[in-house]
Amino acid sequence: MQEIKGGVTAAKGFTAIGVAAGIKKDRKDMAMIYSETPCRVAGTFTTNIVKAAPVKWDQGIVYGNKTAHAVVVNSGVANACTGEEGLGYCRETAAETARLFGIEKNQVLVASTGVIGQQIPIDKIRAGIGKMKPLLSAAPAAGTLAAEAIMTTDTVRKEIAVTAQIGGKTVTVGGMCKGSGMIHPNMCTMLSFVTTDVSISQELLQQALSESVVDTYNMVSVDGDTSTNDTCLLLANGLAGNPKITAAGSEDYALFTEALNYVNTYLAKQMAADGEGATKLFEVRVTGAATKEQAVTLSKSIVTSSLTKAAIYGNDANWGRILCAMGYSGASFDPEKVDLYFESAAGRLKIIENGVSTGYSEEEATKILSENAVTAIADIKMGDADATAWGCDLTYDYVKINADYRS
Image: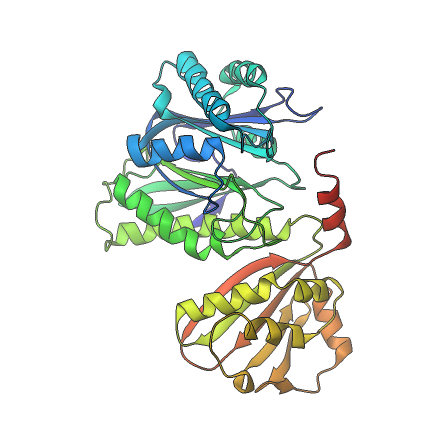
């Protein structure tokens, strides 16, 4: 597997673009992904009972039609809590795209992100679709424009692409996502779009995505809020020409899932690092667990602890907060057997051993915690299972950003 330049346009047959449609002031706010041939499509969505209209629309396509040609995304307005009118605007968006491209409207996926409770400006959406059609391109720069157009409070675009050799053919997986705030498992608050030219059955495509999400997007938390719009879509058009993957136990399937997981892990970590107001990526690894479930529960509890996140912001090795977060997680373990380490580019330091302080140097701990990516490693000495979660520090700017979000 090799990482290459690009994002959603890296795979054969995919084009994209991002434009300013006037939904937001002086910013790109609409994106499109288009495949020259119909794609098999898989998706995972928010677990929030309050689901935005685009989520409902896309679920109908993913679970029903199972093929798609295009994805239309807007930022600035979430089209959530908008009733039947909002769902109608999804239909109109799909119908206008279908009319312009000569495809079926149930082959058009729709996604929105932004303020909840407002109706989308459908006239601007229609005009934006028309504006994007002649600009679609397979160039890497076009994929970058799309990645920029879906940003809300994100401070950086998030895109990646990799290639792998499958069945004697070069297969590409590329993706882009947005996510900065209102991010919490399960299905983090995010929009993610992954494209691939692999030939694979729809059933295995869905299986691969559903399994990948568990260890990637569902292991990210910024602020404990699960959004109404969370959507991850995976489109496969088969143009790589590899023998169709139809067996979950095959080497080809394993190679594809490795590439998919690489892309999703990268995007998940990018979202965590770009948490609203964040100054650093906070990674938590729990090792020595009796079961995967136990490791996941403990790692998520640590990475979501507001007190721990605040300590990470302050470069403070306040390890008691980490043990406390583990203790209220609901997972059973022996606190008197826990070893805890802090690690970063500045080094690695054992903070506690068997539940008590090692007498570590506070100065060295502060140096390690001052890097822009910090890892806490908790070994609970119960087995061989492990899990990794990603989050960020909690800063003054998080409150400021969200206090002013609508204005």
